[in-house]
Length: 239
Ligand SMILES: N[C@@H](CCC(=O)N[C@@H](CS)C(=O)NCC(=O)O)C(=O)O
Image (cartoon, rainbow, N blue to C red; front, top):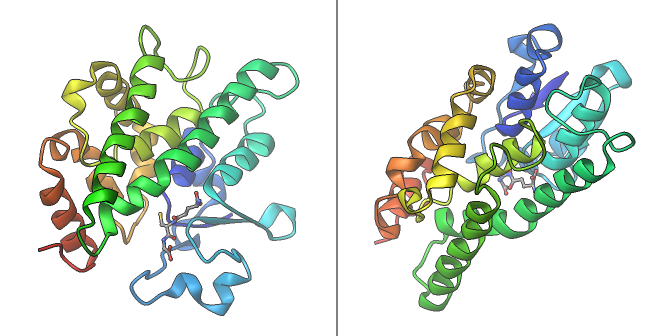
């Protein structure tokens, strides 16, 4: 298997102990977003949307998969037969549906906010208010869900936790000290040795540093978080 950087994918592979078998280090391709390698012809043939991550399954005729949730579900379908990090659509239809619900919720609701918080090149007061309010609303959905629960869906860690934790931790303007259920859950997710190993896959984006420091970073004012993100990723700094 060959994969690009985007932390949920290596995390899933590590959690299933697939990485060492299927993925020698030289098969992880890191793309330079600054050089817009993700929009290059060779990569667009793998992912027509020109974004990370993408996965190529050499065991299935070099089949290419893109969109992180689709990749996670593919990995689960083919390689998580013991259902260690996923739920089965046939024997556990309700849990499987709940897992999908959280994946869709994260992709549709949180992802656009993460982008805005990190990369908006200028101050737009309406947009800032809108996204700040929306962040708080969305994060409250997690907080409520995690009340009295260990994991987002069912009795064990799953794809829903992988994807949600990575996205939620990057809502840099949220102070997780105000959200004890989320804070406890994030700490548990990132304390998992295999998840941690997956996060250490070489990354141009250095997301690992972000997720591990997210709880502290989140106490900073929004402007400071955005300036840090801008400086880290070489985007235009917000003055
Ligand atoms: N919905 C996509 C989002 C992917 C995405 O936004 N990837 C970022 C990196 S984490 C990217 O490739 N950014 C570069 C670009 O937009 O050109 C997924 O979940 O795979």
